[in-house]
Each structure stands twice: as C-alpha cells, then as structure tokens.
Length: 311
Image (tube, rainbow, N blue to C red; front, side):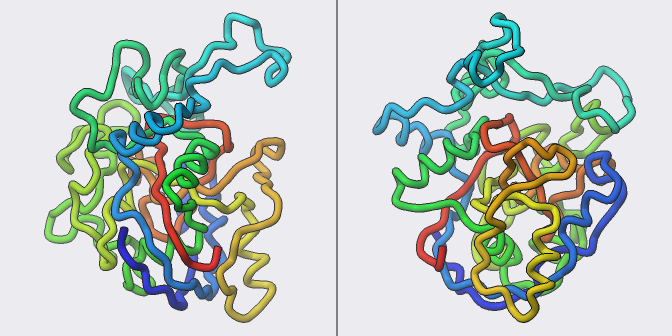
C-alpha cells in the first residue's frame, strides 16, 4: 500500500462527450465540479491480483457470486435451464456494428468466474499477476474485510487517482499518450471488432505495466474497472454542490438511483478498462464515473482496497 496524504481538490469532470457508452449526455453525472476534502489514507498500489484473491479463497473457502447458481426465487420468470452460474464476458463482433446496443458484444457465459475468466476451458495459469475479475460488490467487500481493509469512497478514489495533479484530464496529465507513449491499457482499433494492442496489450494486462501516478499508484486508468463503496446516483454531485462549501469525506448518497435502470441497485465504478476507447467509452478520464449493479461482475471489473481515513 502507499500513503495518500489527503487534502482538498476539485472533484468531477467537464469532459462530457456524447459518445460515452452510446448514451447521450451520460457524462453529465460527473458535473458539477465541486470542492471536496478527504483525510489521508492508505491505498493498494495495484488492483487485487488473482494470486492475492486465491490466498483469500484458500483461507476462507469463500465462493464468489459468479460461482453460485441463481435461484428461482431471485429470478422467478427465468426458465430453469438458465439458472446456471456464470458471468458476463466481452465478445468481439465479426464486423462493425452500431454502438447503441451493448448486448451485441456482451454475453452471459455459463461457467465464467474469477477462476475461469473467459468461461469453461480457461484458467489462471500464467495470470497470477493479472487483476482478479468477475468480482461482484459483495465479493470485493468480503475480501477487503478479510484483509483488514475496505473499499475506497468515490472521493478517496478520485483524489488518489489524480496523484497530486490538479484539474488534469488524465491521471498523468492532459495528453492521452505523451510523446507517443501509452500510459494505460485501453482499447485501440475499431470497437468492438478488434483491439490492435498498440499499447502493448490486446485485452487485459498484468498489473503495473504502465508508469505509476504521482502517488505511486498503478492502473488508475484502464485495464479493469474498480469498485467504490458509494451508492450510485446520477444527481449526487448536484446535491453536494447545492449544499455549498467543501464536502468533507463524502460517503456517497444514502440510496442508489439510476434513472436509466431505476430498479437496479448500483455502486460506483471508477477508472475505465481495457475496453475504453474514444469511439465509445472514454472513462479512463480521471474525473468521470461508472456504475454497476452490485451482484454483477464481468471480465473487465476488479477492485483495490484502502485502509484508514475517515470512512
């Protein structure tokens, strides 16, 4: 872990664009930019890796949500043959497609979980240093509790990701690839057809393959999304700004609400992933936000932990 000194900063992003995950205006959930103070805390240098998660499972016998078969009680209208353990996996399309329907490149894969990231027949051999994926929110919380840590608040995460740089577009500055050098594992090529891997990796990468930010943290943009402890509300920043003054150690809203899926309980994701591209999802920009239903994982979603602080 590394020490994050805490302090005051401007939280959010005005880098709104209409191509963010095919949903016009969705980046507006990172506005208005508002002043926030966070106490100092410790943060994992990298995302939790497969080998560290394996230690947790070996010690506790924990079974992740993706490894458990859904029940008829949870999904009363689902046919029994669909109640099979699994998770969501990205699948490239054979050719260009309109980017307004993400179901074209995501599939529910029976047998996909952290041990089998792409489904049956895949495993973790040689991937010990890769970030663990297919982690739902309760899985991340369980690991953090075992490790004597917790998940970061969204404010802590963004403060740490900025690495003491003020008002920059990315965790390393304002240029996406300064001097022609890629600073994060994101998507090159035509999305969602083929990741050409110009940054050195087509798909997920091991942790710490790119330079750390100013606090010594790796992969605070790209590679895999990271869970935060806050409930997701699109209007939360508006609430903080309306309260006036400086928000001190904000813990997120008391309840979740996403107007696009009002019945889903979502927590905040941060950082973007290896699937982010300026063609579709630019949330490797440091102030932008993501979100996810708490019992849902995928092969581009992981987490890191923090310790101490005010949460």
